[in-house]
Each structure stands twice: as structure tokens, then as C-alpha cells.
Image (cartoon, rainbow, N blue to C red; front, side, top):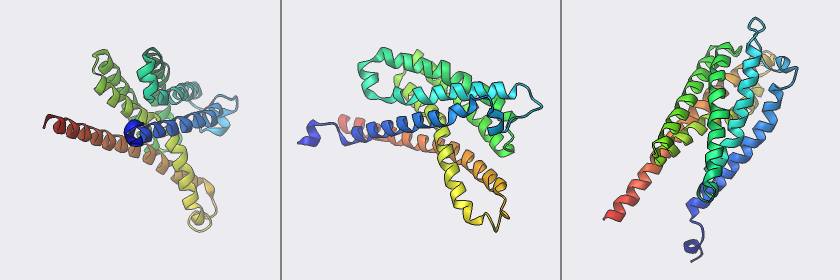
Length: 233
């Protein structure tokens, strides 16, 4: 009786997942973004000294990506969408126009200038292109009042945004997994160990997020089709 009258279990799980994502997103913004906004950022991040505009583009990318990560999760709170549609629209515009749009375009420049190597460079470029494209599809869908398609493209887009969180998680994990190899395989040199962990974290965070979201959306569509078929029967 309680389950019938209360919030459905799937809805409770969905709300808990969104809350966890929001907490992690805010935590990463507070932890990571300030490091790109301080005067000695070039000592913390690999900056191409032969390219004067590398640092300005990196700062713009970090600041606007932080806006996207900070605002993004709150678009998926059902209570905001249902009870405060005007707030939802403001959040969406802020996320896309002040966050994803400048972050993805500046991110393409930053990706091509990265000092992390060719694999992270190619992966980041593909991510930023996908980030921009999925945002454009989400915007076109909502303008056409195709809200189901809009929601799907926004989920795909935020999966790309959330890669910034998973990147930090995977980086720590891959560093920890390789520490037993530091003295033997890496000869006590931490730098190549970090480079391997970073490359693995970049690829994993992006690929796994995109794949996970496509699987989630397919299963969601399949469940909807089953409900519709059952109702029609």
C-alpha cells in the first residue's frame, strides 16, 4: 500500500541519482575550476609558451565548462521542470549559452594545443564537437516543441559534460592501480605513470559516458514501448 501511494521506486532511484550527480558536479567545480583561474595556472597545467592565446582560451574553457557542470544537473530535477518551468528555461539557456556553447568552442582550440599527447588531443576534440552538436540538437528540438527528443539530447549532452567528473575519478583510480609498478616498470619515475593514467582516464571517461547514456536511452525507450503496447492490448 505504501509503495502504491508513495513515490514509485524507479522515481526515487532517479531522484537519488540526479542528486548524487549534482553533488559530484558541484564538488568538482569547486575543486578543479579555481585552479585554472589563479595567476600561476601555467605552473599547474601544461601551457604552450609558444602560443600566446593558449592560456586565455584555457581559462575561458574552464570557467564556462564550470558553469555548464554547475547548472546542468538542476535541469533534470522533476520538481523544477514540473513546478517551475520558467526557472527550468532559465537554467537551460544558461547551461547552453553561457556554458556549453563557449566551453565547447574554446575547448576545441584548447584540445588542439594540449601538451598531453595525440590520443588525449583527438579524444578531447571529438568530445567538444559532440558536445556542441548535441547541444544544437537539443536546442532545435525544444524550439520545435519536441520535448521527448529534447530531453534525450540534453541527457546525451550532459553525459559529455559529466565526463569532467569521471575524468578526475578515473585518473585517481588509474594512478592507484599503477603504483605497484612505479619502481619496477616505470623505474621510479612518476611522470610516465601519470601520463599513462591521464590518457586512460580521458578516453575512459568520455567513451564510457557516451556508451552508458546510449544504453540508458535505449532501455528507457524499450520500457516506454512495452507500457504503450500493454495499454493498447
